[in-house]
Image: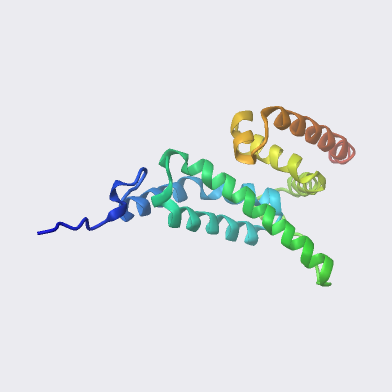
Length: 187
């Protein structure tokens, strides 16, 4: 009599039964959804697209959970996936803008719970952030929004820590010079 292993993946490193994957991804979703969406919003400047990108990253993580070597690295995988998918969306947007004329949507209005000055400041900061080169924008979003260390940013973006410092310094200087006249007007 031959005994057949009901699940040949059960001995694979990092393998968890589907119920564990469901639970783990659900816990990650509950704990990190908002922050990952906000990270993507800072990169693509579109709430709906950012939510779609983040949702796709969670779906991809769930689909690949059985192949994840270290489940503790799932959050880092999600962050990198959101950044990469945001980059892809920006590349796609450039191609669409270049090859098809389309009507621009108006900028989102500030929320009802924010003051007019705060809404103006937020709009100015986001516009200045969008004017930065892609890598500087990504480094600043990861550093100041997600409070990641230089090592974590370097790992997420696949660059050296020295490059992270350089992009952060240049990006901060560019933001200061761009925002200084606007902030003086608001005081």
